[in-house]
Structures are given as structure tokens and as C-alpha cells.
Amino acid sequence: MSPPANADSRKAAQTATPAKVPSSPERVATAITKGVLRREYAIGQRLIESDLTAQLQVSRSTVREALKILAANGVVEIFPHRGAVIRGLSLADARSLLSVLEVLTGLAARLAANNIDIGHNRRLFTAAAKPLIEDRPSTELDLILDERARFYQAMLDIADNSELRRAMPLPRAHLFRGQFYGFLSRADLRAMVKEYRNIARAILAGDGAKAELHARRHLQQTAERTLPHLR
Image 1 (cartoon, rainbow, N blue to C red):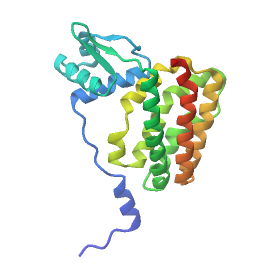
Image 2 (image 1 turned 120 degrees about the vertical axis):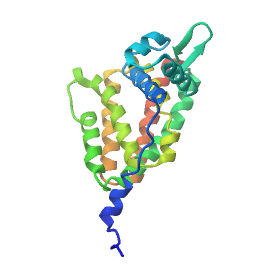
Image 3 (image 1 turned 60 degrees about the vertical axis):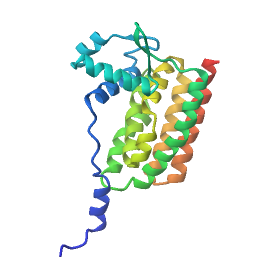
């Protein structure tokens, strides 16, 4: 009879959950939402199928399926005889999205803190958080808007909860971040660095309650910074 697994091997096993391999349309949809986050696509921009097939090196049928996925996720709208257009969030859209993100991000932060010492989680999270929370000159503050996606993804991966991953509206979150990129001041960006630093410290300390509190406060403050621009 084989010996019982020790605590370390049990912990390592928890980080080895195989992920579902995304289909080609899902990969294309993800590439487009990341393009929105990086401001490669603007709100209201029409997505040309032939351009996407050339750019992403996929078939037109794959692009069409990807656009249907994005429409179902609320990232694009598909109009007859016009095609797909990147959506803009209304005030009601943004308020609803942030209320959901507040709860789910708070839960992700709590679970990440609880799991921080499993396997390589501490090293992985530290690597994702460091570029976001380190001190930097004002001229480089804009970089945090591109680095935060990695921070959130690391938090979600370490949380290691398949139901949370399914519930998290990441495509709409990317749409929100892309839409409000230009509205954020230097003071807003400095405040965000402080908020991310508080979340990261709580997660690295393994304090789930405090990590959830700081994550939810960050989303509340995000609402205060952004929603007035839609009124």
C-alpha cells in the first residue's frame, strides 16, 4: 500500500487543477477584449471581420463565432448590415457591473489570502503585484492601468475557485477599464496604487478578511472616480 500523501503534496495538488482548453472562437474573443483593455479598439468602433481574420490569423467563421461570444458577454453589439461595434457602458451598466465586481473581487481577494502559502502562490502573486504597487515617477503612473489585469488574474488564479472564475465578468471589466482610461487623473492613479498596495499586503499576510475589505473598498472608490463621468 502506498504511503499517505503529506501536507505539502496535498497542497501542491490543489494548485494543479487542469484548466479547460478554450476553443478558437473563445481565444479570439479573449484577444479582442484584451485589445479593448489596451485601447487597441475604441468604444463605438466597428469591428471589420476581414481585418480581424488577417490580424488574428483565423477563419472568418471563427471570427463570427467570437463576435457572438462577445455579444453574449455584452462587449459588442451586432447590427444588421453593419456588423459588430464595441459597446459603451451606460451609467446603469457601469453601476451594475461595479456592484457585482465589488462582491466577486472581494471574495477572490479573501480566497487568495487563504491560499497564499499553497505551492508557488506567494511567488506568483508577488511577481504580479510588484510592478503595480512599487513607487514610480508621475510620468510612469499610466503603466498601472496595463499592469492591473495581471494582478487581478493572479488573484483569481490563486483563489482557485471554478465557480468564481465562471461568475467573474472579465470581458465587461476589460470594457469598463478601457472606457474610463482617459478620465483618470494623476491623483486618481496615485490613490489606486495605494489601494492595490493595501490589497496586496493583506493577501501576502494571509489575512482574508482584510484582503476582502480592501478589495471591496477599492471597487467602491473606483465607482466614486468613474461614475460621475457618465452623469
